[in-house]
Length: 232
Image: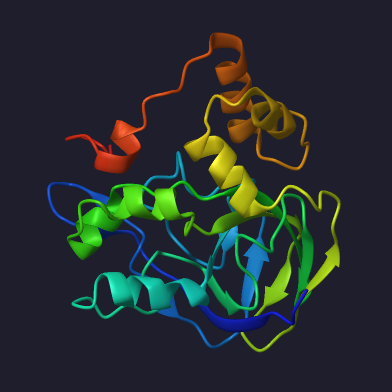
């Protein structure tokens, strides 16, 4: 694997996008070190904790390389990190190179790739591009999440190093293609279910597809619902 260069570290506060919709996609670059703990990075907030944060979605990683594609596709938007709400932006590591279960040492913390990110309608609301979540999903430019195996201090100037790879054939890109482009392909679903490093949510969904032969409805995630994201 090529050397991974940390391009930026970002956290933010959940903001109201109107009509009660809370979003965490507007994050700010942080230069000082932060404590990475099992629930997330520093004081980072989330618009909908049901689908962001938690032990298996503690940190969102998005490759900086993807922004060349988005600039070409939508030149009217000033694309730059963290436009996709990422906590961590790097160069030298994409979905084609990262694998489920990969362990990385960053600063004094130890991370493990837990699942791809499933893009949602909050991206559409922020950038005014209704098809953005679907396009990110279709092209596999989604990024991925980590679980924190060992909490610790991290910063942009500390090395990000792969220390263990247990599932070299199960890249994040493969998981995205299997989950979204061939969602009922038996062999792929079986591999997802049998990968203990994959988040329990993704494994449960894959198992349900195997048992029912049906794919869940993605419309609420991709398009949103009137009351989605409201804070009680």
